[in-house]
Length: 267
Image (cartoon, rainbow, N blue to C red; front, top):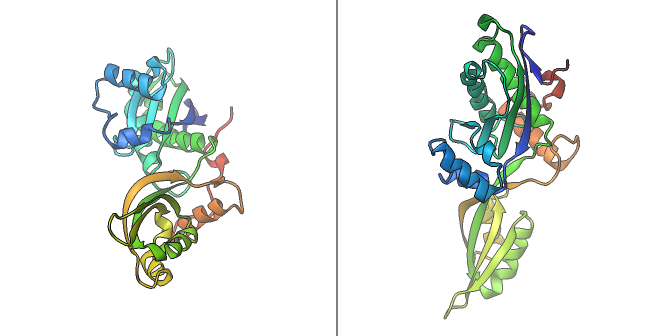
């Protein structure tokens, strides 16, 4: 729950993760803001286990109105919600563009607006009151919903002589790589190793790989997917927490993670 600066309005919401395959479907254009609401609701129900009614309550996606995050109005019988919609959607675009952990784009988050207690006079519930309140609310929702850090992962395809594949495996192991397939090239003494390699571990990978295989291996990398980094980024001292703090320091923002009390209000 967050209160407006004038203390006359209160908004309640809750964050939940999207179905694991839904962000990919949104990014591939299979589910979009421009879809017919009824058709989209049917797809969400059949393919992603959504309640049929929920599919009709989507307000917007984000960031940029197209990203893999969804804002929903799940209120019942609240007056003036249509007046607030534009302000709350603006705050949503802002908050999804600058996530709560690293001020990077967020992905795979659904926020349900559950209830609003609003001032009867429109002058007390304008954009100047609702936008900052909604933004704080969205951050509070995410921080209380066990947020996780995601990292981009390459699909690395490495061609090397059969007797050099041991060096390929050793190089991948030191860089958190995961081999998914090894294939012999017919009629040649070569093998192709396919592996998932975190982008963060790819800097200097080619030189390292060549060094481990006496210059006999040739890699090609393309973006494949996003993966959740193991661990709780809010747990001080954890490896992923150190990653988050390092990113914040590199970006020149306050190194300490935001305090939930900055965003979450109480009655």
